[in-house]
Image 1 (cartoon, rainbow, N blue to C red):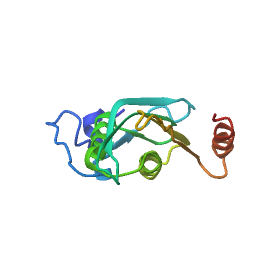
Image 2 (cartoon, rainbow, N blue to C red; image 1 turned 60 degrees about the vertical axis):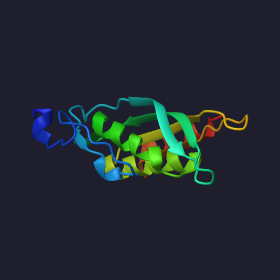
Image 3 (spheres, rainbow, N blue to C red; image 1 turned 90 degrees about the vertical axis):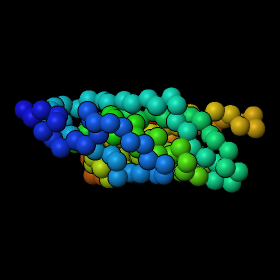
Image 4 (cartoon, rainbow, N blue to C red; image 1 turned 120 degrees about the vertical axis):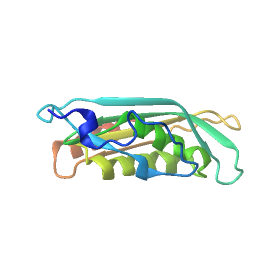
Length: 152
């Protein structure tokens, strides 16, 4: 079994440099040591911030990411830096959730993933966008359809 540092991770254990623009290139992966198992990994980011693309005012949310890994897993510090990179990004709530999901699918090719944004109210309205993806042609594609259909 490899030590995490031997896997070429750049962020872990080094001084943190925060990007001031949308930066999917900071995302890093490591090998899933339990590829034979289906299991959930969940991240909560309760301090997600982005900017309204129209007004430039800050929007705040909790971002929830849940996935079933396959070969690769996202390294948590790189995920933190990636989510922080939205801080000066002008994007609608729905765009943020879909961008995060698509970037993580491209990075890891998980079996299944879902991303939810619990955005704080602005103008008296809360928006909670949800996006999911299951690997095409597998039981995870069906899981994605079922979970999407059950969303309220």
